[in-house]
Image (tube, rainbow, N blue to C red; front, side):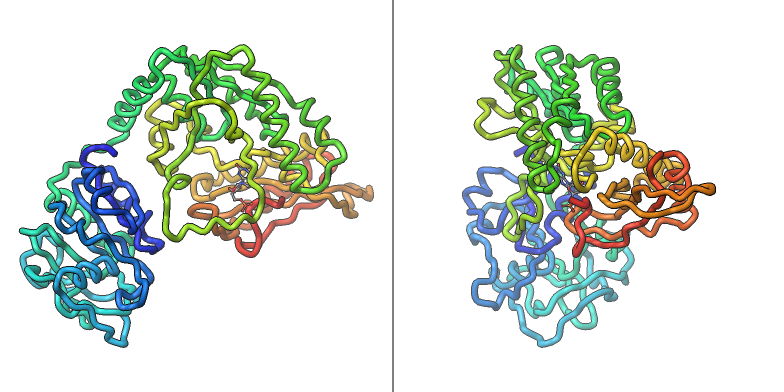
Amino acid sequence: METGAVLVVDFGAQYAQLIARRVREAHVFSEIVRHDITAAEIAAKNPAGIIFSGGPASVHVEGAPSIDTGVYDLGVPILGICYGAQLLARDLGGEVAQSGRGEYGRTELTVESDSLLFGATQPRMQPVWMSHFDTITIPPTGAVVTASTPDTPSAGFEDRTAGRYGVQFHPEVVHTPHGQEVLEHFLYDGCGLSPSWTMSSIIETQVELIRAQVGTGRAICGLSGGVDSAVAAALVHKAIGSQLTCVFVDTGLMRQGEGEQVVETFQRHQGIELIHVRAGDRFFDRLEGITDPEEKRKAIGELFIRVFEDAKVGLDDARFLVQGTLYPDVIESGTKDAAKIKSHHNVGGLPDDMDFELVEPLRALFKDEVRKVGAELGLPDEIVWRQPFPGPGLGVRIIGEVTRDKVAMLQHADAIVREEVKAAGLEREIWQAFAVLPDIRSVGVMGDERTYGHPIIIRAVTSEDAMTADWARLPYDLLERMSSRIINEVAGINRVAYDITSKPPGTIEWE
Ligand code: XMP
């Protein structure tokens, strides 16, 4: 772990990631760990501070998540939030009562006394966000109460000598307007940290690490056009230059103009050695007659691997494979429940039996941080702000058999959807906006002619992480522009529908 980092111990709340992000917004590196980590493992990470997250449990419940109490002897400052604060109280001589009465939502907090967490500049009365059932009645031995609410006499406590701090409210949520300052006081004043974790420090550190790992070896990177592999490649290129070769498998299922853009950006602009495999014909041949969605994904995934393997034949000396793995993929959360809804054969994700050592320079970063690194490395907005796009590409947005003609039709309609969303200035607010081509036809009339054409379904969603999503409330005039342009410009389309299904029960993609 980087020096000067803060550990966020996850007690099973949905808030641990948010806390980790807020710490990073204060320019301090943070790492999430499970609560069953041992004190020795924590000591080995040599953190500058520790934050206990909230959690859904009551400390009084049998089997409630706890922490190795050896952590209290490490001399590292600890901030407990909500459940984490209750745990500090319970473990360190205080008391947590089952008041029988919870406190949920916005509450008025009174700062009682001189306090490190609240500092001198914060208002003595401030709104905070609460979500707890039990109440701390006695703070840990040696701690003083620093804040209260009408229902929680010790809503804040601290023992500066021992480096123990607790807040019953959630400083990490936006509904606690002064919450970020509370976190920053803990980091800067409580842990003695400085705001030194910046995009340029991330790049510098990673460049050093990549050089140390790869040495004089050769690395390859599969580019998908997506932001993760693009930023990983640009970072590795900065570190080892011509020792990196990128492979871009153009499946023919990309969006309009995307293949050219990858070549333009990486080969011409960044000067990266790029093998561009135009494999559209092979994919269309392989997909002929396949209508079942799972079979389709499987076919695309398998062929992708074969094409990639063929492409790297001339690169047999490459021992390193660069991958754009992100932090949310590697966090070991005690609660993560990855129900498999669709097989995400990640095209671009390669099989385990490939004999490579992985280079994963983005493993510690969240998506928005990856975008900032990409911008800092000079990647264009179209790549840095590219919306997520499924590995199997337009193959999962064409219901039924995938053919060249259908892909061309969908690419055209999809380009119109994206152009109009961009022109309306909504591109960054919307998680994904795209077109789907279903396997039906309906009757219409254009001019004096009867038509029997395909509909296009527009799908636009807002989301934080794609686990859940809501359909975007696009303005009617925007929908109207998309509809009339698609019908006028894309031959074979005579109807446009808007998908108003959230996730769940729908998924974002149609297949
Ligand atoms: P769903 O459709 O499951 O999609 O709600 C959630 C997110 O994942 C993307 N997606 C994929 N990404 N390979 C990928 O790399 C896939 O096979 C795949 N299927 C869906 C989808 O675009 C959305 O952002």
